[in-house]
Amino acid sequence: MGLPVDRTRIWAYVISGFCSALTGVALSWTMLSGYTLHAAGMEMDAIVSSVIGGTLLSGGVAFVPGTLIGVLLQGIIQTFITFQGTLSGWWTKIIIGLLLTVFIALQTVITSYKDKHKTGDA
Image (cartoon, rainbow, N blue to C red; front, side, top):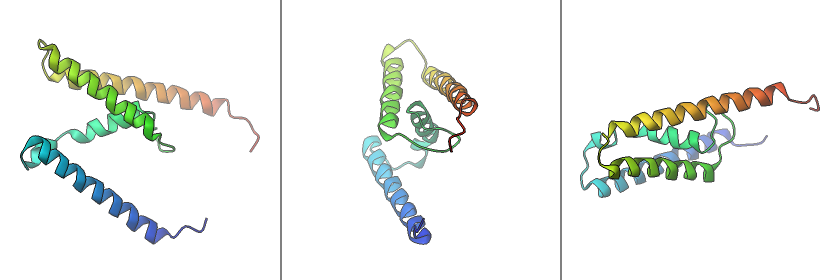
């Protein structure tokens, strides 16, 4: 394909590191602290937002606006449970986990349906 692999790989790591550092600074400003355990478990939130937005866990094409919709949907659920008042914070994790399970099952059904109905027009 003519892509410079080494340079592309280095730039991917540079962009990823910059975004991680920017996120760390933003989280430190939000929490008014630099405590490292504030972000424990947030990687699952990132995965959930991506999957809800339509990114396949098996790889392939990601849809950035869909991921933003996933972030908004997850934020709405978390805000609703937090401000509802009578529910524990663990309900947020439970509901997000159930939502993730539903979307993974939906992805599995859709991809298996697409695989079954592929045409031989390669």
